[in-house]
Image (cartoon, rainbow, N blue to C red; front, side, top):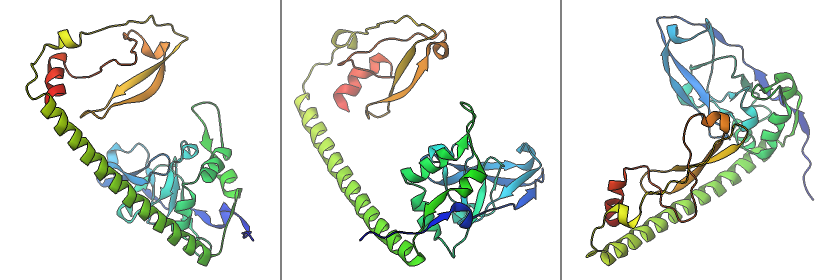
Length: 271
């Protein structure tokens, strides 16, 4: 029989922090930023008070929950780590003290990484395009299913056990992939050991396929990773964003490299 946990408003487990300090132009301050999609809370940088636009900043403490008003709908929230104790944030980053009599910080941290929590933040956000912001009142009145502290602890232990196994499996896979790569490269090097070097313009002449840009069209871009790690898709550009830049069409089987072409053949043969 499945367990039914009580529904609790987030306002019962989170209390907004209002620990503001006056900024001293002559002091140094650590600033916080929150990565998207549950990737954590990290140091943004260290700046002097004179570089901070406003006269006040909010101070954060370890195990507080922080989110971005603008990007909460994109998973920008998490726990303040010990290393950022005493750092500061602007009013765009609401900070909440966790009621540890109701919820374990680690349980909230894991919950916040779920699609459910991201959807919750989306539902609590409103505004026009590019100005959508989380509304705290709506966020804090949203209810979540909350197990007992003992059940939370059991769930945390189980999740971390599985996470550890997954990380070990990933490490093993990386080792296997590296070994296979080295083996293939070794075989390739032997096969071409006596191969004659050729000019790139002979084996792979430059091919340009220019396209005509129109303002109301969209143009997907492809990026190239360093050290032979392949390509990746970049956000598409509108014709307006392209402006006066020249774009060229690529096709399956094309060889791409950001390096000068006179380096490519040597890279291909001796990597």
